[in-house]
Image 1: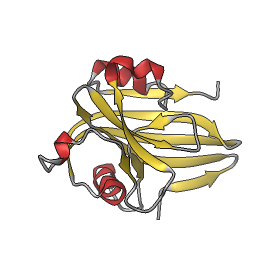
Image 2: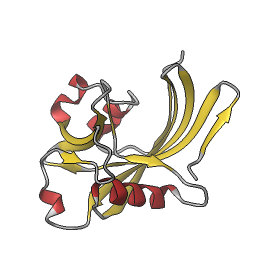
Image 3: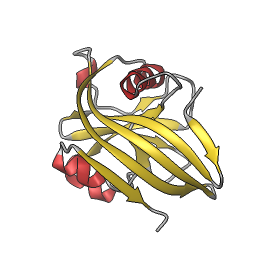
Image 4: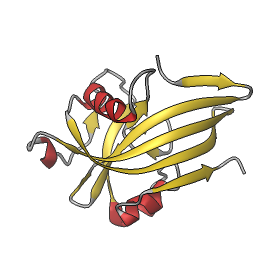
Length: 157
């Protein structure tokens, strides 16, 4: 069961995501029905650590095994989507594919769970500000390549 709770007029999510960088490009996922990009990952399940979550999510979504290289940051993310307010606790890790062949992937990938509207695309870090990547604070994190801080991103104010 995902750690997603309805609390008053908010939805509380606990999420883990990963940063994979190859050839100065970062792997993102995009719902083809939306106008923004996110980092690959997903919701933490009850009894599961955020590290276990990112490994499971990448395996389920891309069919790839990853290793955690480093912890980057925790983001408290407040936003609205589909007329619902969200309070999200977001754990971010630097990750890498384990398989050497996977480390050379530079093409758009499909979701292995059969979710047709999800695509995994590589975005050029030199042009990251041209993309609508959410949460917005990720642009600065990706430009700096590595930070270890606690960030509060509030798009509701």
